[in-house]
Length: 128
View 1 (cartoon, rainbow, N blue to C red):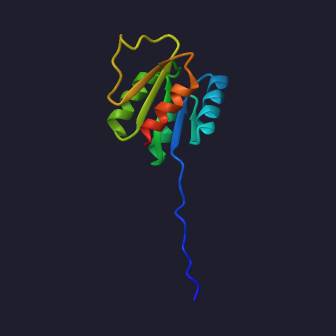
View 2: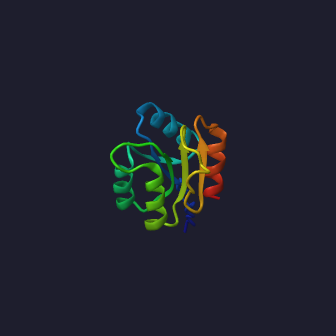
View 3: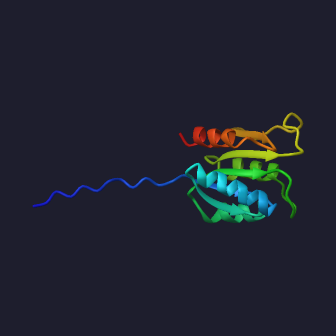
């Protein structure tokens, strides 16, 4: 009789990247993938909410603040905190002053241009 042991399959943590600028979104997706996470992407906050409503595996949302279509990244972060409290939030912007509007609890802010290693370190802390 052969004893077969199955190794546990390690699943990657999933990060939702929300950025309306295609080039910046592509760069953020590459950053997240290179850090060892799985990525889902959205072009705006409305699309991000639809994705969050349909998936239960997203662990972190990495979002820009300035976005079109009536919902910005701060409103998205507030909605996430209200509807999906376990999800961690990383907010970034080239124009926003983080002292002017408070972030939702357990959210972190990085000004653009952000340092990739800072984003990676934050994602790793959030999934530790």
